[in-house]
Amino acid sequence: MIDTHAHLAMVDRDGVGYAGGVPGVLQRARDAGLRHIICIGAGGELAEVQAALDVAKQNQGVSAICGLHPHDAARLLAQDPQADPLWQGIVQACSAAEVVAVGETGLDYHYDLSPRSQQRLVFERHVALARELGKPLCIHTREAEAETVEVLEMAAQHGVGGVIHCFSGSAWLARQCLDLGFYLSIPGIVTFKNAGDLPEVVAFAPVDRLLVETDSPFLAPIPYRGKRNEPAYVVKTLEQVARIRGISPVEMALVTTENAVRLFGPRLRTQLTGED
Image 1 (cartoon, one colour):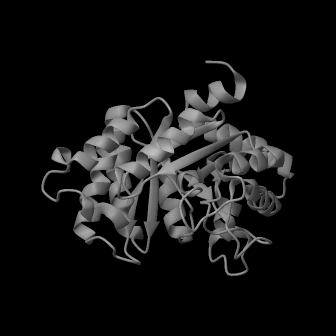
Image 2 (image 1 turned 135 degrees about the vertical axis):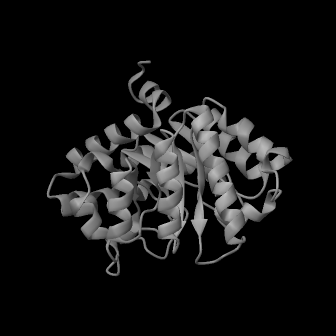
Image 3 (image 1 turned 120 degrees about the horizontal axis):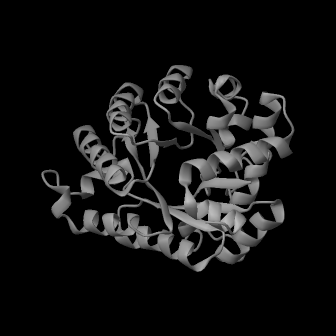
């Protein structure tokens, strides 16, 4: 199994307090059967980006995704993000071999912590960076489905693909993203009673476009709901996805692992198989 989205760099921050820190989290993940974890560095400070990259550099079986979350889009210079030291640091981080995608980026109109126009501008900058580096995108979208699709259409036209992380949107959004060639990463929400359209999406999406994630330390699946989430718990999400698809968890694990390797490329393939 691969947890394709975990905020491991938050583990040692005040208020999170995972038992055993990062080593403890990684050991419990290995004990649960995980082979790889993708660590997210997308806070509004370069220190958070660097922390995720460091976790990937220092631990076998970990890669990173780096970028700027839409909540923090206002931290970049509105007129010219390219001239901003924060953006330059993100570009440098994303260029590292340990970084397998650009993000998480996108649009969040639920909290509106950054102006919507700025979120869109920064989202499009991430698309351009992903195109330049030849890496996929990691997309965050909440209550911004139509505009998200507009940007993804532009990305697809330029040959940029990626994944909609923590997918919990409508069936309409799922179909739009799938038609554009994007993957859907399924979070622990799929185990909730109030999972919305997510079970339907899991049922109709092509199985070769599904990934699983924790988004830890957030959104722990049943039976851990209300606790701090961690990569080991992705097992429960995968079991529910397999149940909906009518296949065994083992088969689902193999499929989602193959999908992650296909999307995120050589680093995962090398770490999982030892082959270039």
